Amino acid sequence: MLCTAVFAQQTTAKLPDNQTPINAFKDGEFFEFRVHYGIFNASYISLKLEEKQRDGRPVFHAKGYGKTTGLARWFFKVEDHYESYFDRQSGLPYYFIRNIYEGGYTKNIEMRFDHENAKVAYDDKKNNKQKTLSFIPRSHDMISAFYYLRNFFPRKAIPIGSSFDINLFFDQENFHFRLKYLGKEILETPFGKIKCLKLSPSVQSGRVFDNDESVTVWVSDDQNRIPVRIQADIAVGAITIDLERFRNIKNPFELYIE
Image 1: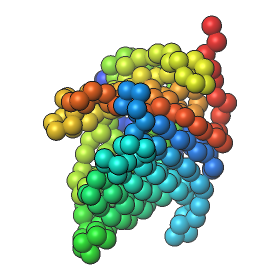
Image 2: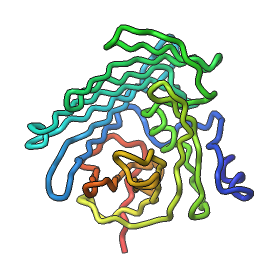
Image 3: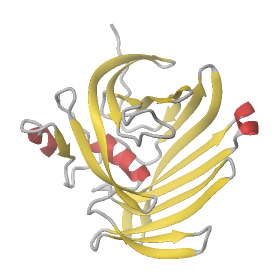
Image 4: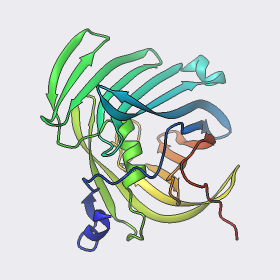
C-alpha cells in the first residue's frame, strides 16, 4: 500500500487516499463485545454491517448499539445507538446518526456529508436546530473511521512506534485522530490464542483519561483486523472490552498454534 512506502521516510502519515478494494469485512458481519470492570459486567456492545443502496450509491450500513446491564443499569442507565452509511470503495461516510442516553444525558443528531464541498449538514434533532459546517477533506465519522482503519491499516511489517493520522469530524469539530502501532502480542481468549496487533489510539486527556495514550487496542493479525480487546485506563481503574461473539466475517479467523 501507499502508506508502507511513506513509512520509509517518516513515522507519522496519512493512510492512503485511494480506491483500494474492501478486503477486511463484508455484508452480514456481526460482533458482540462484553464491557467489564474487573469481574463485573457493565454493558454489551454490538456492531452489524449490511450492504445497501442510499441515494443511488452502493454503501455499507453499520449499526452500533450499546447498553448497560445488571446492577450497572440500576446505577447508570446507558442506551446508545450509532449508525453510519459509508462508501463501499473509499470508506468515506455519507450519513451518520448518534442517538444516545447516558445517565440522563441525551443527544440525537444526524449528519449528512458532502465530500465534494467539504460541508456537513448538521441536524440536532433534540433541540430542533440545523446548521451547515465545514470539515477537513476526507473526514470520517466515528463509526466509518473504525471500518476504514480495519481495511487500510498496512498489511506489511512497519516499525514499532509508527503512527497514522486520519481526519475525524465529531461533535461539530474537526479532529486529527492518531493511531500508534505498539507491536505484536498473543492474547489468550475464549476462542483460543490469537496473534494480535497492539495499537494505541489517541484520546483526550482530562476528566476521564489520565493521558492521551490511556487506551490500548488489540486487533487480530489477519485479513479481518477484528478488534479482540480494548482496555481503557481511567481514574478509578481499568475498563476492558472483550470480543464475545462474531459471525459472517470475510476471511478465515486465524488462531495461534504453538
